Length: 117
Image (tube, rainbow, N blue to C red):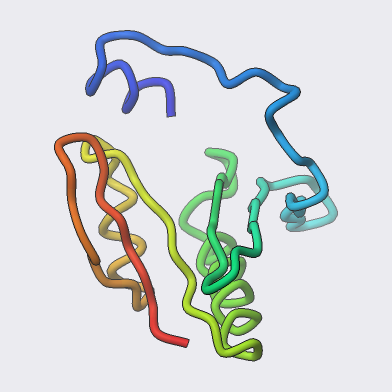
């Protein structure tokens, strides 16, 4: 994420650790090793994906797609769409589009995506 933030804003600012609610995060495991994490927060009318990270050595193996499918199916079970945002400099947009999300709106800095429940 650092490279995408620097490309957009020219600087990297870490988020204070106390601002994270770790209860919403799940560790992604592959081959009995930690491979990444997903953070999903329940809002009144949707599930919000705060983060979906897959470690470089585990990318392009379907791990992120599987985690995203699980989040989408959990939202669908509750009749809720899943939403998230990506920085405009982040190539992950193509991943989310391939996996069924659509761009709901855009700003100079972010693209906001959603899927139907």
